[in-house]
Image 1 (cartoon, rainbow, N blue to C red):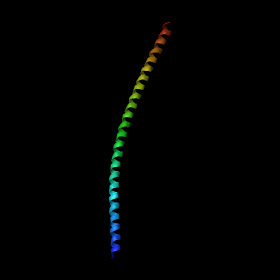
Image 2 (cartoon, one colour):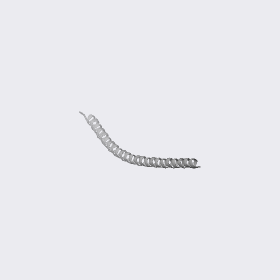
Image 3 (cartoon, one colour):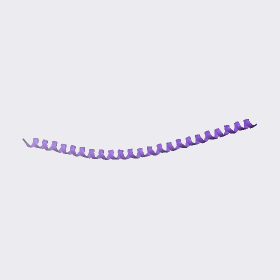
Image 4 (cartoon, rainbow, N blue to C red):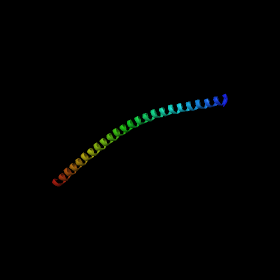
Length: 87
């Protein structure tokens, strides 16, 4: 093995080490990104749950208002019936 072969081998080993380091750095960055994505996902889920809860509250309020309207309508019909009956 001559000096040129030795230098080529050293250059290849250096390149492999640099590639390994780049892969390690890339994996660490990916891990940080995955953590951030998970954090954002949890926040979005919490916001969705809050929105769903508020929508359910609004639906309940609408149903309650509808029930009051129906009862009021029944009372008006009963009053009209009584007026017709006794007039």
